[in-house]
Image (cartoon, rainbow, N blue to C red; front, side):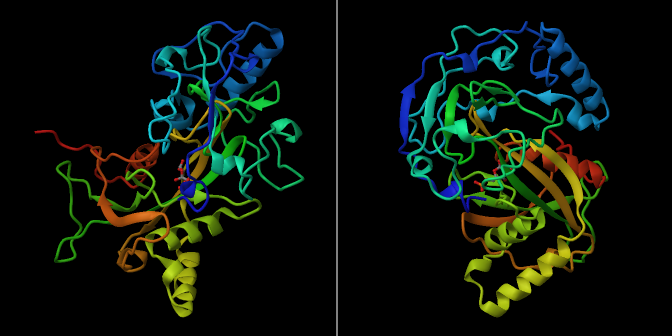
Length: 354
Ligand code: RP5
């Protein structure tokens, strides 16, 4: 979390943008309530072919990727950390997909000042020199999407959010035009009692616990993930972020740092892939959005990382092992990754309501 964008100060410029061609819709409405399938029907034969290819491709994926849910947190009323001074244009659920006409759509344009200052993790304000949907040769930034359709649209030089309208154009507090890639470690162990017996839930299934951090920027509990640097191996991102946020490696002794790195390198060697794709992050805009790969690393007997002393550091205000159940409230779409992890591990999930 936040070694990059988490530290931004949101004092950037805001202007009500004209409704430009970026937000024009030239395709018929196909939205079906709260869920829709990625690239929907279009009028032109070319688009129809693309859509058929997309549908075939999506059918080959697991069901959890088949239906693309409409983003909700990416439409939050006020843009995060703007002291409620930046308000998104409201987008009703049925107007989220780009292929649904929404002629009154007037998104606010906002890019935070810290992004406009051009730090190393941010693109130039003008995206016209960027080649999207590939690895950018000039700066090695991966501009490909993790989404199953394989490519996102670029309209008049601006990349377009593959999950639809957000009520805001520009980059907000995200550095990259288009996808901003993160990696999320889901570190789990079984909950045990004082006799070291695994605790089961009311459905008879064992209770899983995961390492959660409390984000300093918004106070919400989250996975200890972070941004992937250009050309960085995902495992390196996981080790760095988990070490800094959950084990406070930044303040460890040199010897401690080496030990943490060794242990995590070993522990993060084999993980279970849980999710790869778009994140419903409150920082998303029509032209910049979060994507992640979430991996589960499980300490079955609780003697490895499961026995570590957690110590919040860097952008984490707090860290703890949290019991997994359906009552959790987490940052962005992290709850979806946690639910899928519980399912994969055949662990307790449904919270019993009395
Ligand atoms: C989320 O933002 C990702 O899932 C990841 O957890 C996080 C990365 O951003 P920072 O924590 O670095 O701000 O969308």
